[in-house]
Image: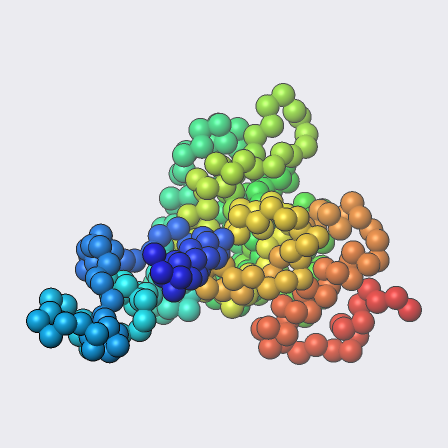
Length: 307
């Protein structure tokens, strides 16, 4: 293979890996492209110098007529220009706009399916409530956590325990109300804790993979302008990143075509009361506010700053 071909192949692989990290699991490829890729590469066009050096009794007629026109050197002609890559479901920027009535109906139908879900038998048998999600169906800002805890399982609403109360304070400090945003989790059921009367456990990758299509439907219906991923497990479930939340927080990512901001989980802030940690989360929220075009006062900019 030529060096140009290798370069093109490497770039394509890197692009596909980036898409996979952003949640894309399938791409659209036309039948013609698949057929072309299955064929051996067409020989490159002989250069003018080669043609001039060829014996007069060996014309260039053996080269197919369709490749006699000048082509980029060393680029296999059997390779078509890359086709646009499609997400497995419509991204919020391209999904059709639904009427309020149609969106509400679609959400109600989705909720019914989620409430009846028993795909994870061990979770379905131990849960008290399915925790679907709560908030504004037209929200520009969406918060995503990992899974419900004991309080959420009891009440059937995400982020209602101590960590949820802190999240509500963060939202209000941004100048919003809890009802202005949408709050959900990757898992809709509390991870079971056999033999334990208290405490939580991290969802398994298999559990998150099983449940995350429901979150995708929520995202595609709401079409938020920004998503905030709360905590390392949520980031891992959404992006497949395992670098650690301390390295990922504060840096914009993209998920299903939407800007995504990773930050610490509110539960982490409850365990770590350091001022600089609170400031880091607030700096992440300031970036979110700026991306949404929200007004930011001088007082807001200085929250948790050292005197």
